Length: 118
Image (cartoon, rainbow, N blue to C red; front, side, top):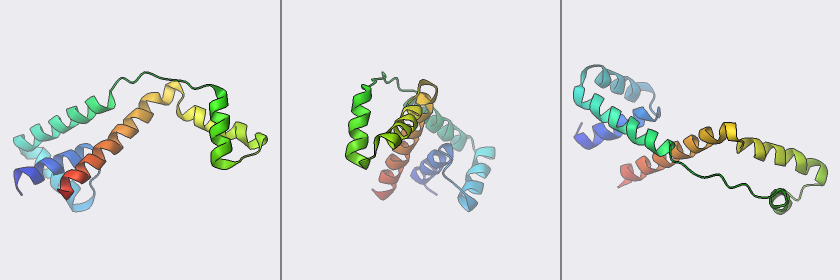
């Protein structure tokens, strides 16, 4: 395995994307290979920094959400409030960090996929 493949393996392990044989191989390397441990820590740090990006919250008015629901779902007013509650809860302050972390992990996974395809 060349250094690029080892780096990709470390990154995928840091994102918890591995299973089966690949996961066991990464765990084995992590247990005894200092270079792999270093690479794994670098990827962890990199992904943590992505996840911790500060993004200022912008809250649209309630009418914006009503218009979006009308356009997307053509929902009657009785269902519209339930949809608004679900969407609002996703972007609630207590879930904001989780939402951005999820987006960062997905972006990192796409970046890894692009690197693998090059």
